[in-house]
Length: 194
Image: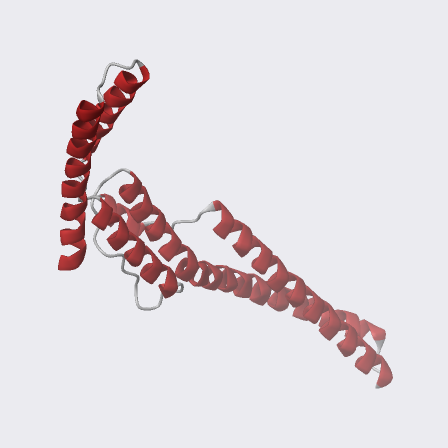
């Protein structure tokens, strides 16, 4: 349901809006300069050919509305083109953000995929490599690690209080090392399988 809703609406993020406004401003400024320059050139050529000033003013007024309407249509078309163009950048960033958020929350994710026309396919490869590396470390048994570190803390407390003899200390540390080795073996096996 959420996927269908997201696909039907235009996603405009703050940075995307700023980019669109900046580019649209450039398009509008260039259009205004070109239209103004065209009217100036038309006027100068008409004066050079000795066309009466009343006729020049009449032609300028008559051609003003078609130019304004065409400019508005082109501005709207430019806006739509800019939205589509920036989606090729911000669409992948949005998907990457969603996947990273899931990964941070500890949820498993599939490999990140972008659409054919999307930009930034290099990000996909970086994320997928990162995801594989993180999955390898998830093979540690968290509960086992907590117990090992708790046991280490208890041993350190006893050493500090001089409650352990050398043999007990050696045996306790050997037991901890064995448990850590088992956890590392699990991770090594998971890494070798891939």
